[in-house]
Image: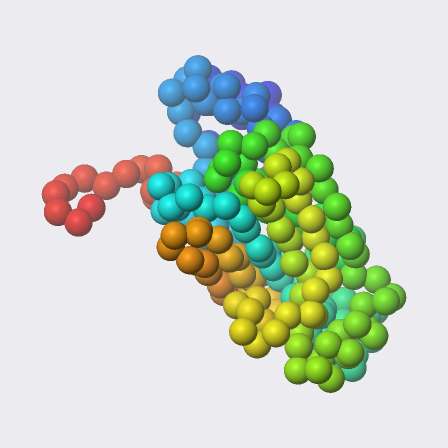
Length: 238
């Protein structure tokens, strides 16, 4: 953390996929970047290959985004789809680990902590919230989830761990297990892919989806951030 602060204060741009120090030191990092006229990019921490940070930071400027709904955790998406197919929770988690989707310790994924973290970071980019102070209310994927997933499937729905943030409820991020209908963009995402829906009253809902969870996806996100920081030269559509 001290090395990151020193780099920013010295005018060195920083690209990171580490969530912990960004979460706990959001304002301090922001101040250090201001002192050094430097930049921070966190795509790898907000959805890996899914370009949610770019949307929040740049593409949605002036669009008046008022809320975010997301399934930003590939492990939870995969596990819930497995549960809907009748596979037990422990077996679903083991399969996610075998495929390289889930980490050796999946507790952050199943508890909703990882999904909440990603949406906290997006809220910070969108609305300048201090992410270190955002409250989290999370419903876990636990032994109740298999029955919920099967019940949703019988009704033609899909159970999703949906993370939300909204200007109507400032400085709060929630994660809830929701049975979503085919008309919902979050219905069509298949684990281990992810999705995020940005609500813009005048423009309508804008959805980005895909970006399956993988080490390669996180690496590509960091490479993209580096290339974007390098900038482009020339004229025309640059």
